Amino acid sequence: MSEAQRTLSEATDLPSRMELGVDALDRGDAEEAAIAFAAAVAGATPSDDRVLAERAAYGAAEALLRLERDDEAAEYLEIAANSADQELRFLALRRRAMEEVRRGELPVALATYRQAEGSAPTSDARAEIASRIGWLTKETGGSSLRSQAAFRRARGVPAGAWVPRALLAVTIVLSVLTKLDPALADLFALEKITSTGGDFLSSSPWRLVTVAFVHGGINPDWQSWALHLGFNAIALDIAAQLVYRLYGARRMLLWYLLGVIGASLASSIWFPYGYSVGASGGVFALFGIALGAEWAHRPLVERGMREALGRVGGLLLINIVLGFGVGFIGGGIDNSAHIGGLVTGLILGVLIQPTRAEAMRRRWTAAVTGWRGGEILLTLAVSVLLLIIFANWFDLALWRDTLPF
Image (cartoon, rainbow, N blue to C red; front, side, top):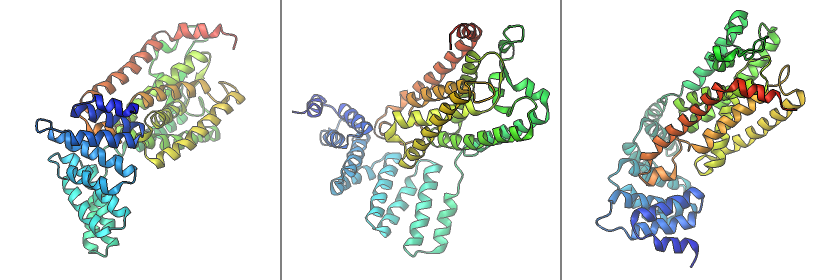
């Protein structure tokens, strides 16, 4: 008897078998997941939660589809598609329609998508299905009016979709203002230790964040300012969109600010004599979040994004290596801020699942109840850690100054 079979034999109730199936799918083991979910469905009793058994059926269908056992999967999808639970019914109908499209059964898929639209639990889900209905209506030679109506339904803008570009716009506008007003740039830049060796940063903690809105230095020439802001703006646009797609607008914005603070603290401790400017520490934090999520929660990250993140990882590595070559800090690249932001982002991305992806555990179990609280606790823990570091940054900087490198 294999280890998986032995474990399954010890799981005698529906929730335990569900747990085994969910864990197996999150690990990418479709064979073990199919066995566990099928056992959960077969062993369900009249006293068991009916919706939970139907979720097990959907899990079995997903695993079997990954194993290309489509006929067996169809039976389980049928169970889930007739569930009283709206979200589960939607997921099953959408999955069935996707398979019908794959097999070239476009008229059948169109009818299934129309059923799914009626069960869509959110406006984002309805917009997604409406877009597919519009496309299939055109492909099957249907009414152009119906097709246009479906595309109009699909054009609803998801809540928060404007936030990444708003963050970019605020960064650009404030960077222009600090370029035009050197006094404002001096107020925003990350200055740490005074010329007499005193603690300057503790009395002006806002600089930990406002540093992201100054580029090129204090009163730089236009060319240096434009190059610095231009590169950071392009990178910020890409990174913010990636994290938004994985975690949503509120988390993206909050974690960006935490990343900027983490980068500023690393820069202050490693290079306390002088000032730093630029949004690149926060940008590295956003890329760190996305890379951490791709590494730790790979089954939840769509293939296209994984490929993009693979290229991003290489670019970040090159950037850090070049930073060591040009000079760790100062006239070159602020590598300490980059590494500080990257580490802050990696912690968040590794420890917190992508909330906008359809995690296996959230699809088929009721485990979501505790997850929201866990996510908040982790974010608070990172915030408290940064606060502790800030409270002791000056002593850490003095200690760092005694190191031989």
